[in-house]
Length: 208
Image 1 (cartoon, rainbow, N blue to C red):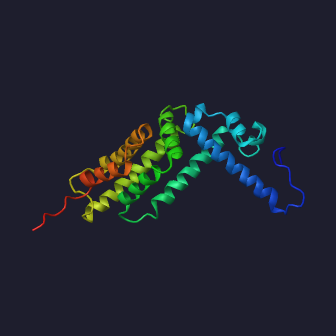
Image 2: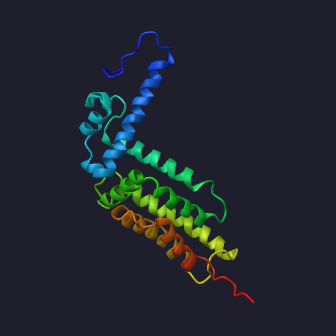
């Protein structure tokens, strides 16, 4: 136990543990605020500790280093995005992607973090370089498979290349959210739905 987490007299056995978990989550929350503003490299453990009200040593009681703290921030961000997307279904890719776009529009800090760090991670020396490369690669592979099944079911246009379309989905989502971060009058959901309806969905059958 560090100096920032002294047990309170009369507290039950779970008291110190609960306090420690609350302190750990407070560190993650403040790290999100710092990293989403400055990126990984600009984020200072000293600043995060000050915002939480602990010493840098107290922060390192919960996380071994900045890389471990950053990984937890990204892990929690991913969990929130998965929850927003909902349970996967065979042909639910486009619906899930739209839900994620809508979620991102209500979570500026998380969206800013992802935009900043994904750009930073293009540097091969960045600690998240391999992780982000794998994210985009795996996301494209999964989306390509779902799009192919969607084509067979008549739910996705038959004249598009699923591999190209899979990459374009991520590109459009990332590009729209960057514009929204620069100008919050941009409606990410409306723009993404425009892309989906005119590029991915089959044309509506003509009415008699």
